[in-house]
Image (tube, rainbow, N blue to C red; front, side, top):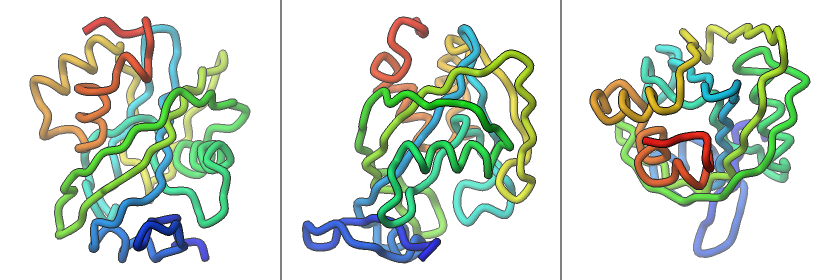
Length: 176
């Protein structure tokens, strides 16, 4: 059931194969986390082996919950699996929906629970190379500017978050 994610089929939330969901462009559940340290956020560059949007910069962590997995538990699990981070306590910020072509004949039509997790002093990042090829801390206003100037470097969802939802996600932390 690991590759079974919650997706709506004829209006009913059901477990579906992750690749099938993306190929069909089905509306489905997702989780995005932004790790914050002051006015900076941690972003990751997706590994080249990812099945869509490889090599693009994304928010700290993004994924799909497993069937019947609580979104916050999913956020904690993927912080650990993708970035080697534990001891963070994600706070739910909002739920947004978007639809975006992610290439290779796939579409993300996501209902996303967005979380903020605050970095801890001395926090060590240990990215899983199967998931993440690079990480960096960036000031939020610089991220806004970079996404605007060079959108092709970023995943479609991060572009949407920064263009349409930044105040709902970051509140007063970002002014751009």
